[in-house]
Length: 111
Image (cartoon, rainbow, N blue to C red; front, top):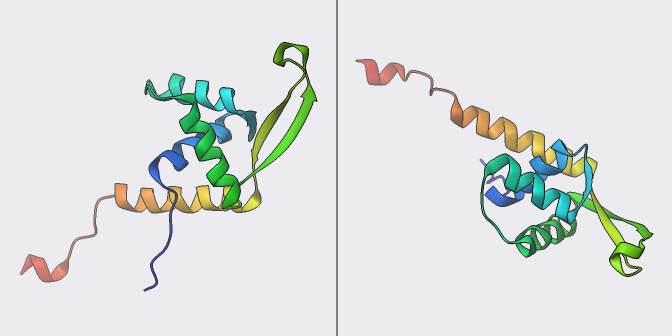
């Protein structure tokens, strides 16, 4: 059986946070959602690096917002899931559900 590639643990956390945020958010929203939902202490750059990696893999896309005065005229990057990203998230969820479920009884082990 060919080896399947799944999302890494933190990639999965970031994708789930994006999903909870209606599929599109800027980096600090993703960071805040992860901290709030998990209670996990992490650095904001960890989230940005992971978002970039997910974009390179084709699981997320970036849309530039409008420049704002509160950001010194810089625009926010909004990260959203691609169809491939949503499919990968579903595939990872199925894989974890299979592992979470009790293993089927092995008839040979019962003899």
